Length: 116
Image 1 (cartoon, rainbow, N blue to C red):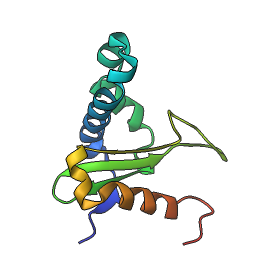
Image 2: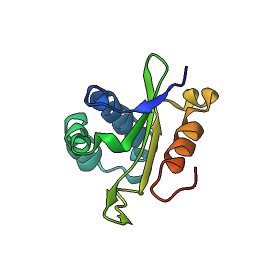
Image 3: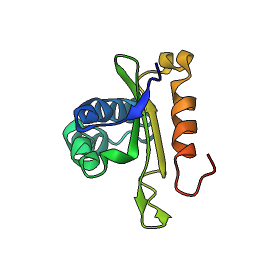
């Protein structure tokens, strides 16, 4: 069974949870902006962000959504929001299954103009 699939609306809450968790875990210690990380960066806000183009997201789902990857496009140019390609996994300990690498590889293969 291939654990990678296109995300659906039912995945948005989990995707947002993973993203918010990772931002707080990895970036809060660097930037220490309570206003952003605890008032602006909320699961509900991230769900609304992804609702408009959930079709551009892939998830790693082996019974539980453990990671996601996606690219946002604005016409031909890549909309770097915030880094162009987003990829998050649920935990640093989740790296043993290689889901982040597989998700990114799969997303790159599916880019418009990519050789498959």
